[in-house]
Each structure stands twice: as C-alpha cells, then as structure tokens.
Amino acid sequence: MEATTASAAPAGGTRRDLLGLAVLGLPTLLIALDNSVLYLVLPRLSEDLRAGATEQLWIADMSVFMMAGLLVTAGALGDRIGRRRLLLLGSACLGAVSVPAAYAVDPAMLIACRALVGAASAALVPSIMGLIRIMFPDARRHACAIALWMGCYVGGTALGPVAAGTLLDAFWWGSVFLLNLPVTLVLLVLGPRLLPEYRDPSAGRLHLPSVLLSLGAVLPVTYGLKELARDGAGTAPLLAVAAGTASAALFVRLQRSLADPLLDVRLLRIRALGSAVSLTAVAGVLSGIQLFVSLYLQTVEAMSPLRTAVWLLPSTLATVLAVQATPLLTRWIRPGFVIAGGLVIVAAGHLVLVPIHDAGQRALLMAGLVVSSLGIGPLSALCAHLVLRSAPPDRAGSAASLNETCGQLGMAMGIAVLGVLGNAVYQGRMGVLPPGIPADAAAAARDSVVGAATATAELPRPVADRLVAQADAALAHGLAGVAAACGAIAAAAALVAAVALRHVPPTAGTADEPVPRADEPAADAAGSPATDRTPTAEGNLH
Image (cartoon, rainbow, N blue to C red):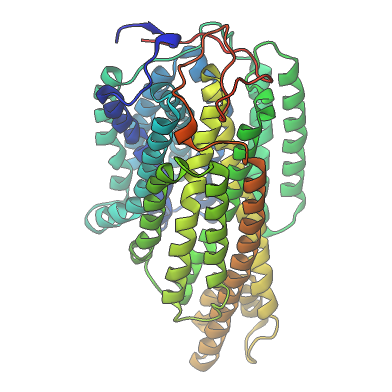
C-alpha cells in the first residue's frame, strides 16, 4: 500500500475501506467463536482428558484472564509496531494454537493453549478498533463501521454454539477449535492487501514496569471477582482484589509521571471518553445475568446446551438489529439520549423477568430477553464509537484497550455481584427442605441447583421430586432477583448517560474530520478542539 501521511487520509467509506472493514470482521469472528463455544464443548473434553474440577475452571478461565491482563499492553504495542502488523501476528498465533488445542492430550497442554489464545485475542481487539478509527475518520461513517463490526461480534457469538453443536454431533471435541483455521487463512491473505498500516513513529519502547503493573492490576482483580462469584467471600479472592487494586493505583501514578506512558490515563479527562468507558463497564455488569438465564434454561427447563443456544437466537438477532439501527438514530438524536433511551428499554426488559418464579415460563423469559437485547444495542455500538472518536488517532489503540479492559472487568464484576445476589436468593428459599433428606444431600442442595440435582440420585422418588421442584423454584426466584437488580442498574445508567453525554451532538451536525497533524489538537466527539489532551503524533498510513 502506498504510504501517505496521516493528515492526508481520506474521510473513509471508499470501496477499499469497506472491503477492509469486511476483513476486520474475520478476527472479530475468531474472538466471538472462541468466547462462545468453549462452555458447550467443556463437558466432553473434560471427560476425554480426565480433567478435574480445578482443571476445568482453568481451561474455561485462562484465556479470559490473559486477554484481560494483556489488553492495555497490546493497545500500546500496536501503536508502536503497527496496528495491522499486530493484528496479523495475533491472528496467526490464534490460528496456529488451534491445532495443538484440538489435539491436546492432557489438561495441562490445553490450559497452556488457552493462555496463548487469550494473549492472541488481546492483540486483536485494540488493533481492530484502532484501524477502524483511521479508516473511517468521518463521524457518520465511523458510527456505521462500528455498528457493522459490533454486529459481526454479536452474530458470531450466537452462531458459535450452533456451529459447535453441529460439529460435536459429527466429530470429536477438538474439531470445534479448528473452526479458527479457515478464517485465519483468509485473513492472512487479504489483510496485507486491504488494511492500512498505522503506527506512532514518535512512541518510545514499552515500559516494562508498566507492563508488569498492568498485569498485576487486572489479573488478580479478575481472578478474585470470579472466585467470589463461585465460592463467596473468602480470604484468597479478597486478597487478590486488594492486591490488584493496589497495583492499579501504582500503575496510574506511574503513567502520570512518564513522558511516553503505556496507557495515557489523561484520556479519561475527555468527558465523552470517560463517560463511554464507564458505560462499557456497566454493560459488562449487566451481562452477568446470562449465567442465571443459562442455568434456568438448562436445569429448570431441562434444555440441552445446543437447544439453549438456538432458543436464545431471537434475543441475539434483536441486538444485531438494534446495533445496525443506531447510526440512523444518532444522525438526528444526541448519542447520549439514544444510549439513555436504550437503557430504559433494558430496564423494562429486565422487569419483565421479575415475575418468573417457576418452570414453564420460557415465553416470558424470551420476551424479556428480546426487549432488553433491543435496548443494549445502542450502548454496545455507541460506547466504542465515542471512545474512538474522542481519542486522538495516535492514542486510539490505547483508548480501545482501556475500553475493552473496563468491559472485561465489568463482566467479572457482574458475575461476582449478581452471582452473590442470585445465590443468596436461592439459598434463602432452600432453608427448609422436605423431610427425609440426609445432611450431606441437604448441604449440596442448598449450595446450588446443580448440587440439588446431584443429591436426588440416591433419594426416594417422591422426596427427590419435591427437592427438585423446590430447587427449580428457588433458582427461578434467584433469576428474578438478579433481573430486578439489573433493571435498577440500567435505569441509573440511563440517567448518567443522558447527563454526562448531553454535550455530544448528533452525527448529522458533525463535519468530516481529517486525521489530525502532529501540531493540531484533535477534535472531540462534539467536533470542537480538545484543550485537555496530549498532542497527537503524526502516524503513518502505508
């Protein structure tokens, strides 16, 4: 690709840009597939590899931990070595590691592969978002590009379990991981031809202490929150969260003192960016209800994982449609008001779930999920758009990594907080059990609905039926309690969005924005020069 200066970049939306956007959908599909298929294949691979309970947890969580911990480093690395280069390297690694993962001979080998998958995935997201920022600097085209990219991710997340279930019916469990190979090959062939390169030539080397502190902040917090959700308050997870918080404070303090920080925390001073990042974390918290939705469908309604995935497709389709419609709304309505309106719809959808107190209410569950999925679409599309539009182009990779890290931490927080709430409701309704249940079986039933199902194996049929019915109703009440909490969170976030983002104008009133020169201040999301940003460095488009 012929080299041009950043200031000479076109407004975006050319045929080449659109083809490049389609290419960027390929690594997005890789991430979506990896995130969505593992829990479906985990029971079968665990049986084949003879993985214990602890090993199963590490197989499921290792890629999440590594991705969350390395997002900040990957965003800074892409700005230094080139976003396209990092994207292709990460994609090649993700495709290559799929082969040993598919043919893993023991849990340790698979866990190691999952760690590499997480590291590779961390390289993809900030690179993709940063390239979209450069390819589509015009506000309206950028909003549409982000919506298409987000729709690809949501669609891939929904179709992943369906594809995995089909493969599992015909082949061994490792075939699911090989889905990455053809996608990777197409990306490696087309990426160098259709994607621009962008890097910050003035950026220095990665600051190793900052890298270590970022890992020391994100990994312990993510681990601690997940353990709190699984086992409740304990010394180890609380210490992990405390240690991670302390590392985060040191990390922020260090970044403020560096001339070339790993993560420019001053970006958070930009009003639209800071508000959008916070709302991304809220979206992550709200996603915590999916754990209880899945448990309800697979235990109370006795649906298989594949059937559950197919049954949830309408709500996913609702999100995709809402994401695609969002750029049209923001042409004439302020983005903050669009996000706020969507969050009000999210709150209403969760309130529809509150009356669910027993089995046989799948229709009500579907209605609530479809409504809330429609409302979450604007939040998903516009937060990424506002973060990238508010950041200087040479800091787009760092801004994207900050946004995604907050989203990952929000998801961990949602699973922990909503998990504790839902389990408290469940255990409260399992206080008095039917007579004739041994003490160990009663303890297992009070611990979780899965424990209740296991405890019925050695009980007389009438007692087992009553215990299962009580556990199903308790889980349904737990889902209702979590839904009520999500409704309250969404309503509060709607108010925050309407107030904090009220200054951002509709995109129809925003002029085309060229990529800033090194001596020009970048324009903020409202189209006016930013006065509180670090001056941007000139990038290279090759």
